[in-house]
Image (cartoon, rainbow, N blue to C red; front, side, top):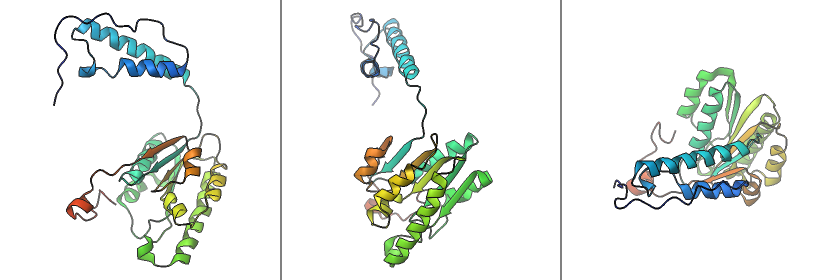
Length: 242
């Protein structure tokens, strides 16, 4: 449904003409009160709308201006919904596009070559990709072998985490390795501490532990609302799942 601008008499003057507060928290609140604009704004007249958006631009510029810290980030993509690895690979593509070096280590996946691995081969040595698992636990059916492969993947990951030449390191499905008990949280946190100041790391998989969530700079939880495998019996398809 498309919302229409409110009609009727002109709106009273906006109570947003005062100078913004100096703190980031107050600027955030002002931005929220001013809103996104469009048909969500209450003004029916163009002049009122323009004043609101001009004020919104001013507040946004101040918000951006006072947030000038640069650092290597710990980014966690977790939850039961689809899209965790996809989100991390979006960061991979973006980082490669800026001419930086990237490493991807997959802890569980490895029984097949995903489409993204094939496509990203175009970047050559700028991307190092390692699928060091042999599949899901119900496929491998060998706990000790799985544990050995996870530890091998972790040793490779530590090397990349400590490498100043890598702008981004992706630890795909590492949260699952933690959940299964094949990797200790203490090992992971120790490895994260090895990173150079501006190296980012993205960690994916369901069930990210509390200790990692507390350490992370960004946490996104994917929520499953509907899935074709469950509701419709649709199989995994090339380009969607792999």
